[in-house]
Length: 477
Image (cartoon, rainbow, N blue to C red; front, top):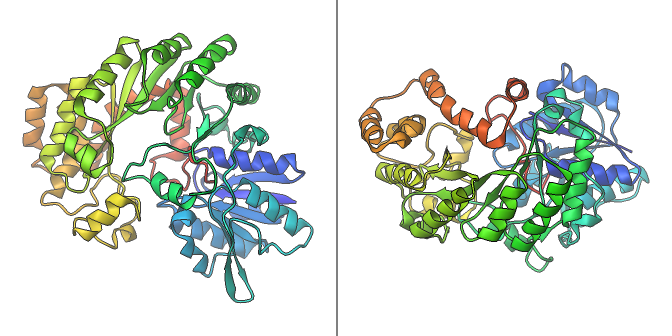
């Protein structure tokens, strides 16, 4: 059977889609993927493929775009459409939408495979675990199957499904994951919700063997150019012994610089030394807020200031570049709290500071509290993702907007911080704001070791990150 995946924009090469495609192909099915933005005639490509099943990933904030894509596909070919991803697991009621045929909740590889098998043999598929199916006017919600515990049991991912697009194939940074799940329970993230939904269904945090990860890198090396590697795991360094073993084997096979994500509690000198020796170029760590009480009380990040300071110093002492994740316009936060985040990042001497205006994820603990306390409008989602203006109710939203653009200038020194405190009284025009973001973009380029030409081609094809329906690092396609 021919199974096609549809995506609106190529900004994220979804590794979960490549996992699903690899499993389908290993079991005799054909697979293809079409990116709407990069097809001259999207409908014609779908029609020419003659699919027996269409899979459309649906992530948080991408549901409107996804439904539009599915509607176009439905008018083009007579094939069932399966929706899967983070959004359906949070909002299973999406199955009530008239345009929705089938919904997959949770890990989708084996449900997609079983559905394709049943469709090919013309069998009833309404009882496949994880699927929500409409049958005879009723909605059938099947039981969730256990999580895949042995990730090595999956066939190698089919990365070529994306590499047919030159801007993805030639992009110098190639992303990988070493496992699935996150041990943390941050109040602003959906992982805590997913853990609860999978309670009793197996271990939530799982890891591939080192040899399997090496095999995946080798497979991509044979299919596309690699300049550097990024591990997109929420927390790559959680198992120190695994990381040390990986570093030893990686350094004997590859010379690519690489980067990863960590958390404050998951860092030690032995591991950092091994990482540096294997050409680890940078580590990204969640700081989130420069106010300890906001970090601990509201964000459920149980790290004290001194712990972060000590870990940052340790990372930099090994000659590894430090990137810090930070949020602003967080519920319960004032503008002075954001300036505390500025000062704190200057204190830890982060080489690259990522600052995002909070995009509230529905039904998370933080969002539920903010709505209850009247800080966040209950219908905030109707406005879609707001990358450059705050969602929260604030006395001075324009100051938050201006500080978002001026954050990097405030980081330079205490003198420039005082200057920015004055400048945020003025509204910054969007073109000037974009210009002010260029140093931030350049630091990201340095962190990931992005080659200039491939990065420029990638940007021309993808543009700003609100143009996406995918989270590349999540195991829910």
